Length: 351
Length: 283
Ligand SMILES: Nc1ncnc2c1ncn2[C@@H]1O[C@H](COP(=O)(O)OP(=O)(O)O)[C@@H](O)[C@H]1O
Ligand SMILES: [Mg+2]
Image: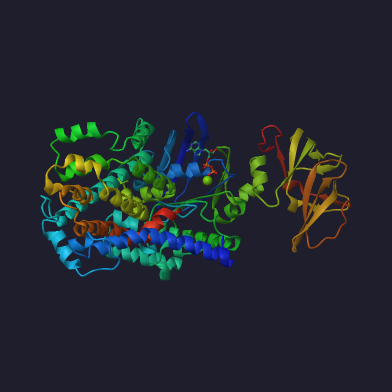
């Protein structure tokens, strides 16, 4: 087990820089999720930690030891790939034992570890099958097993669940979390799925275009998103953004409504409102002209436009609703649940 | 497409049966000829049913001096020579092609693609085209009348290199990365992962190359002067011309029959892998 430091990490392919000065301290035993849209550099960052990509500049340290120049096998890590990358011609047992065999562990020690991992992952009955004779979920378990038997300091996961169907994904997600807690191994997990990120991670590193937008706990990211990008990425349905003018603790909405905000800022800004933080209020300043209702059973999503303007806005109300298209509902929001962002840079305004 | 009209069924069967007949008839006649004595084979009409000299012909062909009145090596020695040549050519070609494809796909070195195209261009230079310079080289190296001389000039193979390159390109990068994390070096990756994954392709290529090697005619004819190095394919031709008297068809056909056995055996033994290797695409 070990902590990981990323210091001023840069990755370029030729002249194009794809990761820009990444900083991050990962504590021993932590489960870190790197999340962001596809193409933002998540896999590249993970593969640099694994040693599969070279470091252009900066430093990666695992357990206080600089690993930039070390081969993947010397870094004491294990990686689970999106397509599992099981050796197709080897049985499950051989797949799991291969790395240990190369490390010249004694036979009975290898067997003991393989059996133990197979026990944990409930794949004992498949040990002598070939990967192609297994379902996606079972292959996923074998890939995990191969990581576990190595007893590494760090687990690395690159979108390991994205080839599974939705139901299995939820189940495996929980199992990965439980397993990581049980083994206490420092883990970095890459995904583009914000729900997966929120449920798995002790802390989330949100990447966008090669920059770290924010690095914090899921609750920090939800409560105090550092930028419009994070605010829009974390939480479902996504946060509403409205252009406003702030003065004297109030935001002037497009169309004229006045909404109190917890900020002494004054000037133009982008106001962020989560759909679930809009409360029905007959005299509220936010008037939504309904375009569409999305009935989810426990709650209803009201999609519409801010009355009299073209700004689309979504609200989530508990229970069922049967308002007609075009009718108007009014909402307000608690001042401490509003978010203000600089319209130009998208950064959070914290004053 | 599956059709169920009787006429189509009849026609397709007819064509197939004619095809089988066209291929099987000469083989049958060869077999029949190997079961009669010399006398019967020189009378018209040619026999269509087997006689009783099969074992005698076999014995004379394999272990006797073969054709009477010539200075030929016994046919068992020719079979051995052919076998040695075909095996050396096929395994040599496969080994060298595997290694060069491995280098070209998995290593970055200067002029990598240059080397690849250089190998590729040799496709245009089969042994028949470069026969004089190649003969010169082999002669200078003192490899005339040897197994090395028979096989080495035929070993370098662009087709096989190209084929293995394609095979290796279908192996997902993650397997290599996985192996690197497991601590496998390049050679270990090659032997533990790449070779087993290319098993069927190797088998398919082996069948093709074995037959290619077995059927070599011109090159062996050129570089073997010693009768103890004669290969079976070239000897069949020589048998036809060698004798001053009328050809001993029974012996010649027995030799031809014997010459067919090893390739047929290789095809049958490798059939399953061969078909897999030519048809299966995913790894
Ligand atoms: N080998 C490479 N050569 C050039 N550009 C690359 C290479 N690998 C990745 N990239 C680029 O780096 C960026 C990040 O890629 P990646 O880390 O795979 O994204 P993610 O995993 O977040 O979807 C992408 O814009 C991609 O085009
Ligand atoms: Mg990726």
